[in-house]
Image (cartoon, rainbow, N blue to C red; front, side):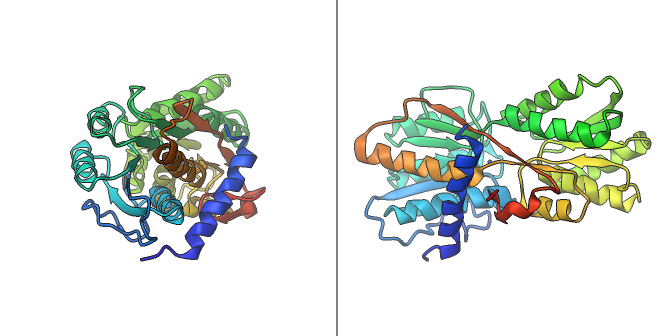
Length: 333
């Protein structure tokens, strides 16, 4: 079915983020890993296969929606699949993309190391792969790797978190999926900033795999062992929102500064409600669109980007500018 005009508007609005960010993260798939085709724009250019992590998360849903919308606008058919962080499922989806004679693959890789073989397989089959949101630990096989500037975004968030903590207090951290390089990059960025303030004391850290339910459960555990904590810094919004739910259940949200990362719609609502201190907006709409346009250029001309790894700066969202969020993951300030 044709994508709704609202998705096209989202992609266009996403371009505005690119200018603001200084160019430094499919509608009907619902997590379907069967790679069912969703495009209906004529397909003159062939099939572009789009593989995201899990569209149950609005960040990854936006990634797939925007990529499919732009591809269809350019005259391609699209199919959107989800691997949900599983490299075996990802490999099956790559096999399907190859058997379907895809002209390009847009991939949010499942694993920095585990996805390398799948990308190599597609490349050997003559299908160009363009990575979005996360990198793999090898260069020269994907035509491009487009990601948020996670180090810059982590520093932005940590600086705001330190400010709202008053440069002192006891805190815990929720860490993302260890298989994703973004998790360590963000954690390192937090530490680089926070370590400059000796009165900020880290009491504990838990891995919550980017997941809201795990964020809730890990926060419950951290609260039991660290009842005096006054701050939480999280590697993404889903974990932060889960932690907020646990804090509310324990009657301890007041007085605890919680910071997130992604710019998700629920995080925006939590900022407006005074529950989340800030989020760091990843311009996912921008680089999802850019990946498709780079793929289109390669298909038409055979020319790959001069620079394989490209990063896009993030934007800090707080109570002061949250009203500038005009659509999911789209900032108009």
